[in-house]
Image 1 (cartoon, protein in one colour):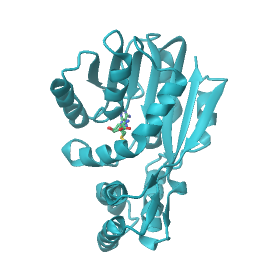
Image 2 (tube, protein in one colour):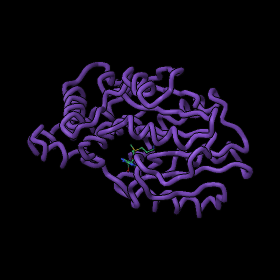
Image 3 (cartoon, protein in one colour):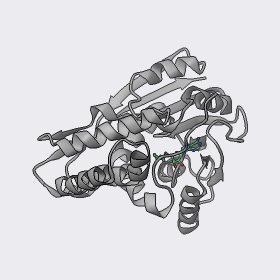
Image 4 (cartoon, protein in one colour):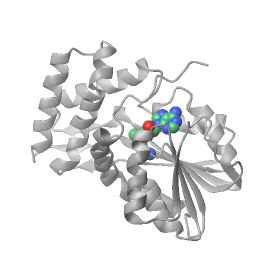
Length: 268
Ligand SMILES: C[S@@+](CC[C@H](N)C(=O)[O-])C[C@H]1O[C@@H](n2cnc3c(N)ncnc32)[C@H](O)[C@@H]1O
């Protein structure tokens, strides 16, 4: 089996601001999804590829002291930030461990809900990660995933720098053996991981305010070295694209359609 080429974006302090913007955009939809699938007090939850822990904290507030959240990420830099928040918030029901989505080392058949957001799109073998996540669920437990489809992002009115940015990110993922256009394919991936019955929906947030629209130039900036190394753009083109995207973000007459998110869940 081919190896993952690793996470192409920034981790730790340099990526935390982008993840904060990302979370501000997606949190309302994630919260609604968690209500819809029945996350409640007392549940045991795992958040795989938890990053700096934004969703883990939201879920911890719902499951309360009688429940627990176990976050796993392969980046210690992301987890350092997550753990510093645990200390600040004095949370007793969340813990974070460093590990791979393919082999989390979490207890098997233990969790009521296993969740991941914007993780599978970075992986070379998403089905293998789903099989691992399935193994963590108690019989009857729910696997819940949210992944993005970059081919659906848009700018209105349209601007070439915006479209070029997504074109480069999609090509970068392909070059690395991952998939930034994870839409309907997730339905098949869930079946391949052993789930026969699945529920699915799409959400597409729209960014209007400049601070939300910064998500796009910050993502491009984080991918800069990987895009250049892959020969997908010159440093000059990257510099120009990032500058144009920044100007576009502050232009109050444009709106950004953030990449549509596939929400999918299934019971073991
Ligand atoms: C885009 S971030 C999403 C973070 C978080 N789920 C959220 O929505 O805010 C993707 C995260 O997946 C982690 N990651 C990537 N590949 C991984 C792997 N094979 N195993 C565990 N974590 C991984 C990265 O370190 C990063 O923190």
